[in-house]
Length: 485
Length: 53
Image 1 (cartoon, chains in turn yellow, orange):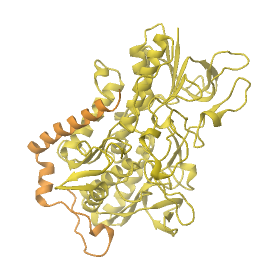
Image 2 (tube, rainbow over the protein chains, first blue to last red):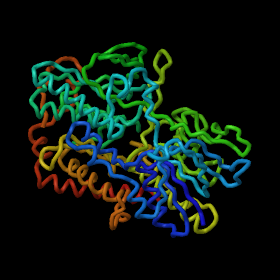
Image 3 (cartoon, each protein chain N blue to C red):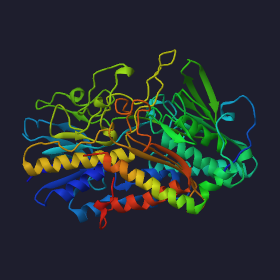
Image 4 (cartoon, chains in turn blue, brown):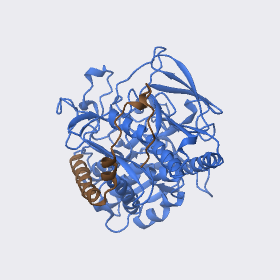
């Protein structure tokens, strides 16, 4: 009997565990280790953050699903990986610490034959002084944060209803933050809600971003066919911002947040501030802080993980100039080069470099987005890793014939505002591939037939449709495996 | 659709293209959007199928 352990029940980890359970017979054990008792469909947190959905609409308890499917669920935090075992246990294992009521604080050594690290990121609010729900800004990164954001937003809306002016600042809260798409979507939704209440004359909405140009989204921007031209997503994004009455500050790295004031540095080295009444800023991401030790108990974290805490996989991590980057640098199997039975998928894998061109300010501060690897790519990675592990378990020999490189994988990002079949509007963006391939597509880096930017109700319907479809799939209800990632 | 009057100053937000009334109508015109719904879904399905082996 083989034991496969998956760390993290987000989009990537949950996909992996469900595919493993489907592919492996009951004689093999599939274990999920996650500190969260609920699955959350993160893209819909935006609707929670504007009060159009309740948190319970974007989550469901994991334990009943895993019980029904025969997955051994341990509500715990993974602390240390022992890939070689230790002096007492010869098999590899992960040391975990339970967080569930009744077992809180208890530790356990969970042995494995294969380990999939899909922990997602640590939301690194601490990297920016004063950032986050414990500081002076709100977040939509979790359903709890989004519910808190809605409470704060309501306070501003109430003040505007009484005739007070309010300043809204939305964007990235760290010089190297990613997930611009989520922040962009939230900015549009806030503008939509204010406009719906006919209070736009009392609002000043500002988008603050570490992107070199708007529409970069951490993937170096994209080119799309529009109105007889090939045009940049910079134009597409700026057009939507202007239409919604949102001003912007670009090339800005937020350094500190105080009550009502954001301090930021721009690429030209200028230190500035902007005042706010309501602010939602996305934090920087880091690895969740799992350690690794060898058989003798020596710390080997630096061998397994990159300095940012994400797990090193089959990527080319050789430092190179921007002009020498290639899609071949990007991983395709997500297998650790050090231990062939360890994999990492979703945000947990260490990217070889950013996709956007890296810039430093005149003072030496790096200000550029790190690569996005959420949503659709996360699910695809989880599936591919699970297929390889399942086949390895069945054959008794590690094989990695299934591949999914972000240089050959597309992604869809639907930035939707409003809610309902008639009232919404979405900017639908698809890119293929996520990492531009200038060898295959020398002119634009991507296939223009599948790289799209289109505003309209259709995208909004897709967003609604995806909410219900992917929650159905995640619940592993009949036919779930027919729904693609 | 949100449409804020644009003051013609020399600010970043004064320069991007702003959709015309026809454009905004088409974005909400159900028959056209139903077609776009299927076209976009097909493109995304193609991306998914081509994304991994």
